[in-house]
Length: 65
Image 1 (cartoon, one colour):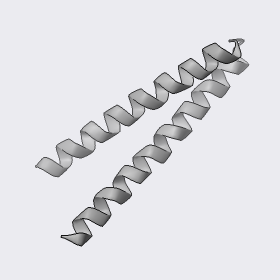
Image 2 (cartoon, one colour):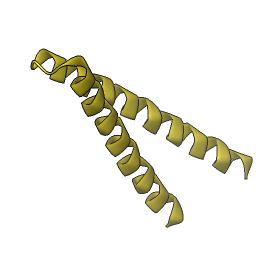
Image 3 (tube, one colour):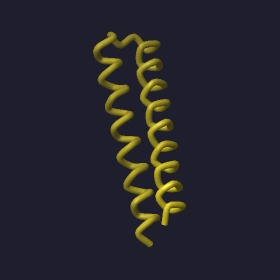
Image 4 (cartoon, one colour):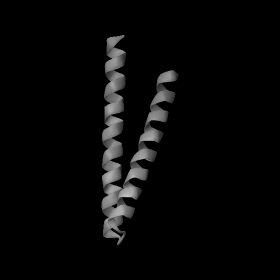
């Protein structure tokens, strides 16, 4: 059972890193596109939240089956 927990935590950590990178890239690209700093941060946060939600729901679906 500890191996299952370790692998689950590793998968969640990878999902968080991928979501953070997606949020940073979205904020950076929106800044390059001419958006203001607050709008860029909001877009990056939404991209982070959306990416993490999709990744964790997919992970939960794969673990449950």
